[in-house]
Each structure stands twice: as C-alpha cells, then as structure tokens.
Amino acid sequence: MKSIRALALASSIAMTFAAGNAFAAADIVDTAVGAGKFTTLVAAVQAAGLVETLKGTGPFTVFAPTDEAFAKLPAGTVENLLKPENKAKLVAVLTYHVVPGKVMSGDLAGKNIEAKTVQGQAVRIDATMGGVKVDEARVTGADVVASNGVIHVIDTVILPKAE
Image (cartoon, rainbow, N blue to C red; front, side, top):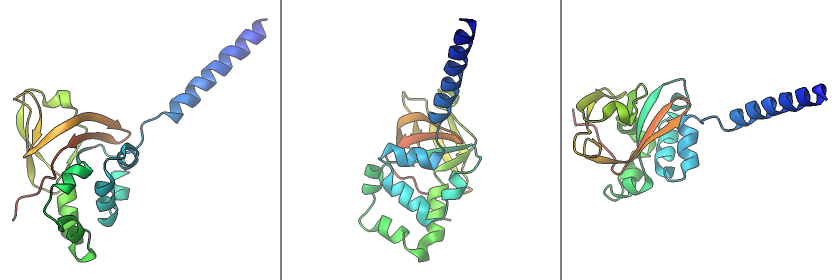
C-alpha cells in the first residue's frame, strides 16, 4: 500500500512539473502572436529583423500598439514603413516602443517620469492621473508577463521625435 501511495505521489509531482512547463510564459514575440491583436506589430517586428532580439534574454518592457492603433496612422504609413528601403526608420519606430528592463505597472503608479528607450530617446510615462500614458498613447492593458519581460498594451503608435 505504501508503494502505491508513493507511486501516486511521484506521478502527481511529475504531472505538476509537466503542467508547469506546459504553461510557462512565452517570450514577448510569442505572447504578442498568441494575443491575436498585434498582427501589424508582429509583421513590423519581422520586417525590421527584430524577432530574435525580442525573443532574447531581455528583460524588455514593450509598449505594444494594437492593430487598431496602427489603423489610426495616416493611410499608407504602415505600408511605407514595411518597405525594405525604410527598414532603418521602422527599426527606430519599433525600438522607441521598448524600454530595457522589466517595468511593471506598480513600479509606475503615481509617477511622471521619462524612460530611455532602446531607440535612444526617452518616452514620457505619466501615471499620475488615474491611468497611464506613454507619450500620447493610453495604456489599455498592463502587465502582460512574458518569459523575457512584460508587455503593456497601448492604443496609439508612439513616434520618436525628429532629429
């Protein structure tokens, strides 16, 4: 009887670990793909050659515009950015949405700060007025945890300042 209980306990532990691995958080790219509302962002990340970077160790904080956010851009903007001759500009726009490190919404509560992006310029993050804004974008979903960082969903594509 003891051996049956021991076997049952061992099986239970093994199944728990297997289930834990099956449900481990995906990386930022796979999390965005799985969400189903970032198809334009994922296509842009692919066109910019940033997939491997965003699947890397990180951690990264990504302010991820939805497909609806991209649709707010003037007609032809996305198509132009996706052209091979505009890759450098596309990379600049995308990396402006990424901050090194894992910044959770609780880290921002009540603060009005600037955070340096991977692109090099700083974004203004304002969490003092009962919500969070990143430049002019509103955070509509926070703390989507990935294995290599966190995603905060935004309603507008933010653009780096012209240099």
